[in-house]
Length: 408
Image 1 (cartoon, rainbow, N blue to C red):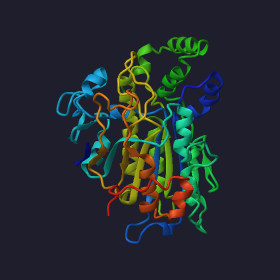
Image 2: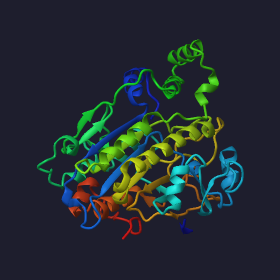
Image 3: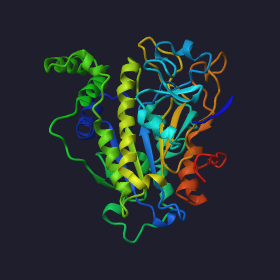
């Protein structure tokens, strides 16, 4: 049924300890930006901006964009199914059949303003349920891990401005460079200032990472209790903004500057919701939504020329597991935001959730390829040549850009 409707992987003990410094600085969020040539933008539209947001850990697309109109949805999702639009704590209406999670009020406002396009039943070309492999392929743009990312290789087709110094030079905000922007085009690094004390989200993340370790897990839990943290703190529904809000606002200010960068990559972790998914997602989605709202606000007039792709490595299982969560899946949801986007619609060649319609009888069957969306942004938004698309996504000429994503 075709519908166009209007309006971090688990870490070991060593990885956990090595990652604490980065978490203390910016939570689970990182930002990188780059500056393509000014001539890349079409005349009359101003300089095009592009942002890619990576959600690490596999966002449950059926939780954030619920297909309440599918006859099998509520039976399969059980405790994960929210009330329909108009009911208390119900999903936000997306024109019928689909509803947006109520924590995503900024995104819903963009949708109603025709600045957000919801892409459902979407996935990359790979069919792995490994975080490590899927994230590598999502960022490399190939069917294996490469030493460079698809966005960096695409930008190589543009000459570097003669004045590409300071704000116009490539810049990474955080303590790690996402593979997406690694490659031959230079990208500098900048660490955000450290606060007086780690945010509360850090403690929850620390407990989550250590949970399955037989030595660290109990020790971390006991340490948090000794400092006055009840176990319920780790599943708090409230959100305090976190590192993503700070970095998204910073990205907006950088992209808005006349001599600033034109391409940015942000990432946010914490989407691996095997247990207690409803409470965990509520806070995570509120942080993501607040960050996207800050990005839009800080960009000002430059938002008119911006396209933001929000994507994750894969979706999650359709059925709820025994811990009131979901496991690693395949098809999911993505978002395309910005003033350059032909929004106000849900775009989905919906495969259905009924008997015999699930991928391997467990996952949402993908019917759209993430590369279609990325290639559209590279060709039709940044106006990159065909060789840039070939460099970004090798051996993929059978997958072309998708029509109808951007404003004419």
